[in-house]
Length: 447
Image (cartoon, rainbow, N blue to C red; front, side, top):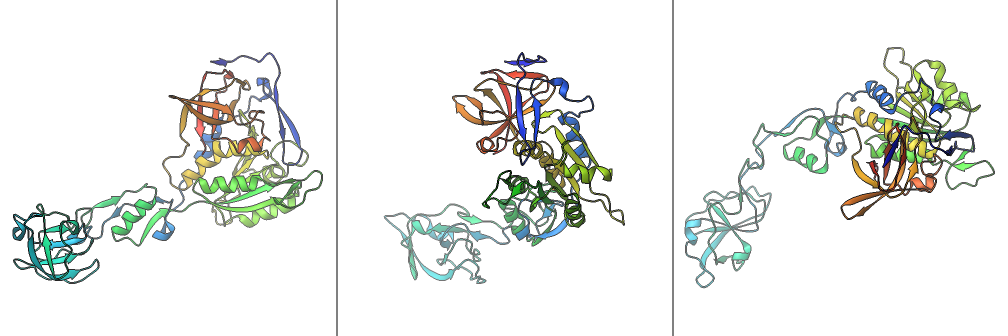
């Protein structure tokens, strides 16, 4: 059961840590805490997708094509296969020579040639002759069937055949897979291993595809240290740059993980300036709220090309999105996503906005994660007026999929350990304030 439009009787809250102990407080029950100017998730997503387009196609080799999206149809340069060839190891024969062959009365014939795959030989079989042949080798002139080696005594000079073959048995005909000029892959196809093989079989060595977007990933915060290094009081390991770089790669992008930068406006401004013209997108985490050290907002807001504002979601309310200013010749700067610094907030924000944008930039037609209809295995509260993204674990129970919160703290935006157990994000609409045990819930799959 879901409860719509109801205020909770107890003001519950989730306590958000920014990277290094900067605290804000999200009141789960306080729908009025979201300003009227706040965008819905759908409005923010629409603004993001309207600002991005597939990257211009480029010529890439087959070695570089995995995961990219075709920008042109691929047509076969020749018949595939280009010649009649054997589908089995055995003997190329003339069927008329083997009528009546049985295990009790095998037919014995001379072997006049030995044909391996790749051979250029083309002996002509006369009446009463056979050629030993390997899988993929061209069928010699005069042969009209292949006898599998299992139906013979495997002779090399003379062979005894114990079973006659059927018409054209075990022969793969020229053009059986594709004829010259046939379309083997269509524009918009994602290049999986099997599709790359199809392109190669069609005689293609290079193809035009949308490049994978190059994405710089930056964490901000003077409290951040490289994982594994000693920490003093007030310091924590940088997990966000690893989280977001991996998410970029999983979405089909090329991550350029730049690690953490301190809360210094000049340092961040210099880094961002150096990235213009070298990447297609920049993903920052931290420093986007209203704190004294929110360096990302301080650097980007004055540009006038990046919008900062709340989104009606939990976690992940503070969001920034836009572009680095165009260069002197009018070329657009990279797209910029400024995400909250809390790990769960950053992940949810990436899934909601960044991933679909990167998918579009890469030319993919499927932008969004699949969802499943699940049943809540426990009850939890959701903030009025905000769409909630609850990290959940999933388990099959007969015909049902059960969803249980991945952490006892629910969608608390600092609960990164629980996030590591999550298989999905349960999406609770803005007008629902409570999910009851046994009630329906839609889950976006993230693994």
